[in-house]
Image (cartoon, rainbow over all chains, first blue to last red):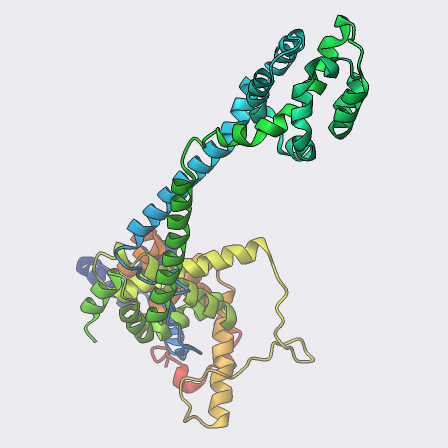
Length: 259
Length: 201
């Protein structure tokens, strides 16, 4: 088979009937005259014939596809996207309202953070202030006090009137002891009879004032309404939870139906 | 089987319609894959991948021969597999005789009514042909399998291989020449019923 490859290509195409009729006629006349070319054609035909005799392999198993294979998902109800949107929207509103309510006290604390020092100074400068004035100051302080602080002070709430009744006596109490333990404050106040130097007044002021928050703390805390009503927050939360459950049930039902 | 209606349904996402087509063409697809890859397990994987790919892209089918379109898909899957194999060459785990010859598993026989002697003969011949096919470059093998084993014309083979018809013509001719040379060494295995050299007689 020493023919050039172009001739072999034509022979192969001729064998498959892929040659134009004019070319085929030319080749046929050459095949009659050229035994080598005819031998090459026989070789090609034999090779093709052997390949065609290959037994056809049958598929050893079925190649049918499952929905999982092709990533098909069960058809969901038409209302599914709407409910999903409502759920996401409600969850968003819930987060917004919850965040707003949570941040409101912190923000008011942040705005009032500079207030206690001058207020104490002012209060301290007010010797013999009326109980109502002290309570008023305490009321302004109440939102800024932490819950733990309020809880710590709670037992002294009953003693608050004593402190407010004797503001001058409270001035003489040691600042450290009064600040640390409000419970013993009334007894100390009772023991002190002499008036104290005016220099100590600013330091002692918190001791005179600290009992007061107990009397005004609860009304002060209640007086700060949440930015958004708790009812709305709970409503958004409820819608979100309900939506999630509905979506889950719809998916489950669709999947079961699909099977 | 109304193939056109099944294809239309499959294009609209009807998996059952597509599976009917799968059942109809799975033998041709697997046969093509096993001849190109020369390995049954790999051919199964390639066939399954081809059907998955075919379902996912069936909307791109614009008419014509669905079989040719499927065979093009499986050819691509086989060529991908061969490329992967080239990157990660593996040692075959096929059992061998003491002489180092592979023991061919006679699972697949075209005619189950053959006698054991005929089966053995056919097995040996098939093994010899597959051996010669495997020795061909992947492009030549693909062309000759599609043309001679699946009986596709040059236009369909060209479309399946995404090369011009001239290239296919050349590949088929070269593949046949090489196969003929290779099969010469197995001349004694070619039984008289498989000898097509009547012109030589």
